[in-house]
Length: 510
Image 1 (cartoon, rainbow, N blue to C red):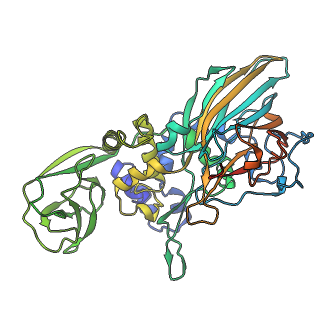
Image 2 (image 1 turned 60 degrees about the horizontal axis):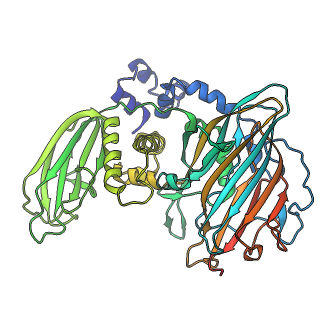
């Protein structure tokens, strides 16, 4: 759906502007062409203030450089720091990429310029050398050397998906007491890629390309667009829609692939989203949607019509999804209602969580409103309501989109306030379970698990010292690293100016 089409649905199109924009390539037309995503952001009362906070982020792009972090710290590595020329490669070395990258442990940051400095200690704990996850405690002793108390908003990023959020969300404390955190959610952290055709990958966007290395996440933290979307409150999608729900009698005995087909006559400006439909084709030049009668669903199959309503529809039964051999089916009840897309999404997200959440680990405690927010973001940024939809969502199937949004890798941010008294200190501790990066079983290093962390960006928080601690694991179990856990060392002092540290474990070590 293009921007003009969606604006017509909402009644926001000025016909004078449309007439003037007949020459689509003209400068005036280019300037006036509506963008749905911008319309959403413009409606948020807090967008301007949040945008101001984001653009004030001090040089976050420094994270992706090979020297220095964004804190501006000039602290030199002390004795025992990982050497750039050491046996493990130090600053010059990088871990090999993983087939499945879990993302690094990130650094605490602020968006304001502050007099604050921090001593950071990252502690890694493993019950055994074959652990598939680590227990991480990321601690900051924050000092205020000024003669005035300093209050700042802090952000702690972490990588997760909606279905792993409850497991991998850090617990944040201030001086040992739970911090009052609010959760902000970023969009999908990866990109899209093509499919393999004729000996190469084409330029389509049918496949997901999730983050594969730490720089992918570093680029997101340096991107004001990503931060803006994460911190901006979403406006409700109060778009009028007409919903057709289909409730069938059971399939005839022995007809395991019995299929109901719905052939529709759309209007001149109709867009149809589907839920619960398995197939799509054409019948006598008209769109035909079909679904199997035997499937159990979170909700009845739906045709969700945006814009002009359907002029007509017909029902037919078939022996299978190919819709070629007719089959007499029992009655089908069709219910037509007028509502909003927001209401439909709320219903579907709630239904999916109630059906799948009871037996699917990680969904039991997921906030339906957060799930719905993620769905709206994808719908309007790369889905059917976007001016530049990805090919992956071009069939307008809400089932696929709503399931996929649960598993997409993304950045979340715990936000909270820190007040450090004049001349005083506050300890911030972020404790979490951290998933390992790994290779698939057919890969050369399928038994290798990877863990890593970043030293920035820290924004207005100057990192003066950095220490890594290893607990419940002998350093001899680490085949590759750039930290310096050698010769029995379980605590090392590191250079805060090096952006990335990593180590690997043998998953089958005894």
